[in-house]
Image (tube, rainbow, N blue to C red; front, side, top):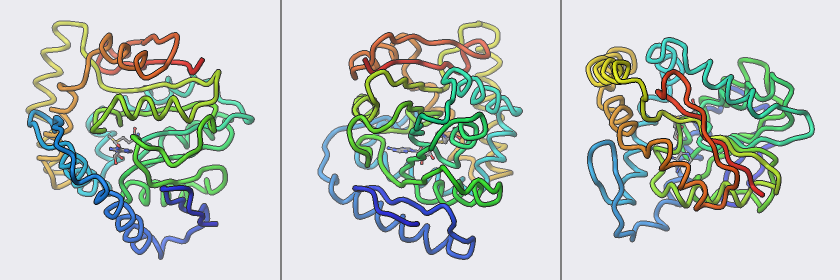
Length: 285
Ligand SMILES: C[S@@+](CC[C@H](N)C(=O)[O-])C[C@H]1O[C@@H](n2cnc3c(N)ncnc32)[C@H](O)[C@@H]1O
């Protein structure tokens, strides 16, 4: 059941728990050897409020998610008061799942979007994430939920997806794009793998449009979230990065422009919860 897929590694549906750590090790080695290909970049990228070498950013982001993978789902619930579930449901509702369509969830982490897609009647789902620990965590959740069929777990980079051109009917990236080093490259590659007529949705933290809410949200984010991260996940710094990365992410109109430049048509967005998050939509025409 375990099939290599171009540069990605597919994780079979029925792998038992016992091989989790070995599998994570294999995926990690594959990822690290892939990273050596690009060690000569002289570009820079933001890492939270810091500016770092572009090739360093991926290692730092990997460390963040290595560190939080085991507690990632619990932290999502605690930090958002469960709201992330509603935002993700909204995203899937917009896609109108159907059994004859394949969804690619980029930076899919522990699989929330793929599980929802399948539960709402969607066809096959492919989760592609660069971090082996997150992929292994998601795959284990799939086993625990008895959702072994119809979800393929891939380890791969959003900037060069291990999938053929025009191979999926719909694509999502939820809370993933801000962690990607070269966002225009990732958007262009998502457009490449979408079939013409396919829809792409980006669910991401965005610019709050309600002034008082913005102030409260800022205080909560900077004062409370790293402390929750420290207590629950044992890593306050990882959550400080997450908060800072949200502030550095392009606001709604700017992200819409990036999507148009990447090749998407009919780009639009919807704010949810006063702009704390936005769902951007684009089509491959
Ligand atoms: C905040 S988590 C979101 C996970 C999931 N989509 C969700 O909504 O719960 C961000 C994810 O992006 C992944 N990621 C970061 N850079 C990536 C890249 N270049 N390509 C693919 N995944 C990436 C991380 O490994 C992590 O799992």
